[in-house]
Length: 437
Image 1 (tube, helix red, strand yellow):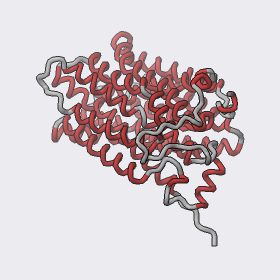
Image 2 (cartoon, rainbow, N blue to C red; image 1 turned 180 degrees about the vertical axis):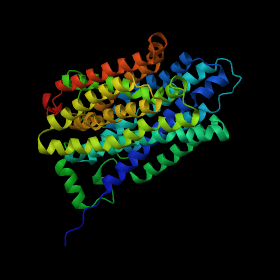
Image 3 (cartoon, helix red, strand yellow; image 1 turned 45 degrees about the vertical axis):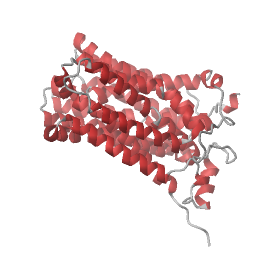
Image 4 (spheres, helix red, strand yellow; image 1 turned 90 degrees about the vertical axis):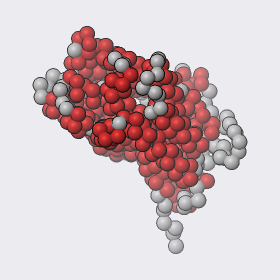
C-alpha cells in the first residue's frame, strides 16, 4: 500500500507566516505608538523619522550578512536566535525612562539593533524555501509567508491602539516581545533545515520535494548539534552574485518596492490622523485596510504566478505578474492621493498596497530559483535594496510632505513603483547563477 503524502512543508510554511507576522508586529508597533512616544519625550516628526529610519538602516545593512549566515548555518538556528534578539530589543524600547536626557539616541540605537536582528527573517525563510519547496510551489509558499506581513501590520493598529488607551504605550512593546519569544521557541522545536532530516516527512513527500527543487540532496547544511559549523561547499562566490544583471535588476525593483511599502508601515496611520483628520478609532480602523489588502493579495499573487508559470513560463509568470502589479500600484497611488474623502482615499490607497503585494512572491521565488544553495545570500542582498528604500521613505516622505504637501509624497512613490515595474523587464528568471560560474 502506498504511504500517503505528508504536508509537513506546509505546516512549517505556516509557522514562517506566523514569524513574519510577529516580525511586522515588532516593527510597526512604533508607528502607532509614535505620537505618544513623541509627546512623552518631546520629539518632532523629523526626529521620529530618524527613529523609524534607524530600524530600517540596521535591517538593510545586515540583510546580506543574515542571508550568508542562513546559507552557512541553516534557517532553523538563525531564525531561532533572531527571534530571541527581536524580543529583547522590543522589550528594551519600553524601558527607556521618560525623563532621560538624550532619549532620542537610545531609541535610535535600540531600533537599529532591532533591525539588525530582524534582518534574518526573510533571507532565512528563502533558504528554507530553496530546500523544502519545489519550484512549482514557490509562488504560493512565498505568498503565504509574506501574507504574515499583512496580518502582523494589520492587527497592529487596533491592538496597539487598544493597549495604548487602556494600559499605556509601553505595554504594547511588552506584549510584542512575549509573543515573539513564544513563536521562536515553537519554531526551534518543530523546524529542521532540510526535509531529509525531519521525522514527520514521509518518503512520498520527500520524493515530491526533491523532484522539484533546484538543490540536490547531497548538498549539505550543518547539524544544529554542532557548535558552529560553517557550510562552504555549495556557496556561490560573491563575485558571481555581484556580476549578475538579474540580481541588480531585481534589487533595484525591490528598492522601489520597499520605498512604497514603507509609506504604509511608517506614515499611513499618522497621515490619516494628522493630515486627513480622522480620530484615533477611525485612523486605527482605516490604517488596517492596506495591511488586510497585503494579506489577501500576497498569497493570491503567488498562486497566480505559479499558475501562469506552469501555463506559459517563468518569464511571464514571475516577471510579467510583477510588472503588471507594480504598474497598477502606481495608478492607485496617483488616484488615492487626490481623492477628497479621507475614507475613500484610504480604500483606494489600500488598493495600491494590495497591488504592490501581488508582486511580492515573484521577488523571492526568482531569487530562490537563481540562487539555489546561495538563496539566502542572493535574497538577502536583494532585500537590502528594499530596506534602503524603506529607510529613505521614513525620512524623505515627511520632508517632501512638509515642503510640497502629502500629495507630492505619494507622487514620488508612484514614480518609483513605475520604475520598479520597468526593472523587471531586465530579469531572466531561468538564468541560474550557478550556471554562469
